[in-house]
Length: 347
Image (cartoon, rainbow, N blue to C red; front, side, top):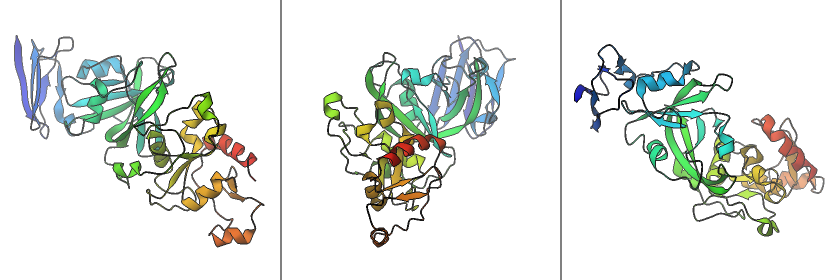
């Protein structure tokens, strides 16, 4: 037998009775009105639904994951866990992901990259992946938790996220076989992103092999011969680089996305498969600096200071607007080893 527990608007504060262990009976969303029915509810166990409009978790506070699911129900094991009683979706990120082809990261202070679910075969927009892509249209909220590696079963709340964009990329599955993966790009709730998602799909010419999806395809040993360009075209990897460098040239701060070129630091032809898809092996440059960098006529030291090749006269650099005083201000320690190798190739 099912009892109607609450009919409420998500802009109002209500309290519903919740049953921890019984399956939810009815959950309907009609124009932001929610009808919830649960079999044999226990009146002493309740959830305050004021959190539908307020932040229900405290940033940086650690929670027992089982407590979250006791309160909100949903999948207790997976990385994507939609609640079955309130319009929440919980996503859990941790160090174990890379073994399944997952590697999540903050590419800048406001953009978080999250890999979709599915351990084998191509990822598809079903179940949790579909729920994440459509959460805004379905009036659901997404909350990011990070696994506490030294405390199994505990998670730290990071922030609330909103869907911004997605892309496809080749990643390994649990058996190390290549498959199509889905990469979500979420923004912090309320954050301003100075570009539209569609602008990141600008068609930059590239010799990097790509499929019909615009994703990067790792070539076989035969196809690798003759690949000497470092440019990266459309696809999730290019988007990662653009987010990493915060939508502007790493040198000049020029911010016309359609003009900027995402490049590998260590060229495609000299990088291994992991390095080709490592965002730290990427740099975003305006065309003049990209052309010089691609041909190893400029590089940068570990402080970000530009280095000029002796094969071109200083006057020639000046004619194309390169002063020799430029700096990259947003280098990370993960860029250093790639720049070391790039400098070794300078002419």
